[in-house]
Image (cartoon, rainbow, N blue to C red):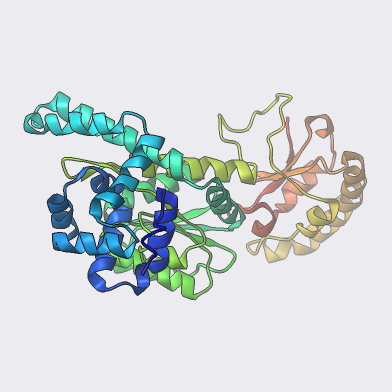
Length: 387
């Protein structure tokens, strides 16, 4: 039992205590703990009766939970949740009251529009206020290092994973959307390895197939990053990191604004971390060099390999031409002093060096870079200079 003379005095301390003690508390108290972390707004402004109904417990259980956290009664615990909103989201209580006043008119389209708009704003404001920047950066780093990003988000979360698949495709970042059509989710995830990453999204009541696929990937040692809504989510203990999103709701319909905002943030941040172009794509003929990964001379030379599909009959001729090309290329590499860059379309050279005579030879050889070096699609990448 927590010392009643020293209960948590702010939401961060209370949340840490709930997460620490949650697994060891009785089932009903754990149920309240889960509800409190997933629905802090309801705890802040609900009545004992309404909160107990939503959490599926008796009102007396809320009192017992509060005392287990060190407070005299439920109102003391509720004050902590209210203080959190006063500090982080100004005028939040007034907005809540306005929504409640409009509840009887909720069939009017304009009221519904404003209701969902307010809900989305609150969700995004809460995300910005409480998301740990260090966790966000770690998630971006893990995803940026992955050769392939496997995206899992089913049922309500499917729009999030499908958007990320679309955006990654536009950014030339290799990803696979696990849609589980025909029950083939395990097969779609079968080739994921430790060089890849799995990104999962799931919220209460947690899609069972999403959880099963995430657990399978974790068991294989595949890095797992997730977006979920509670430390008690089945995704939380197996993810590194997991990013918490608590969406507000309007008339029982949960927003997706914060989740999509975070998904867009991750997608663009991963592209920037990898050095992909995130605006209008590569600029040909201009002075601007795209920010691709800079490789050392040793890494570039190591990257020259023949594609598996290279015609066997052409190997002898190709070897001769490759032998002609490499001495010139090595000499140029010394001149470029590390300015050559690798992209999804090939080895890019600074525009001032586009007179390299061996570029045509490289094209004929269909020389490509290993996926592990430029972390992109496995299609052949041609050595070329910017025009």
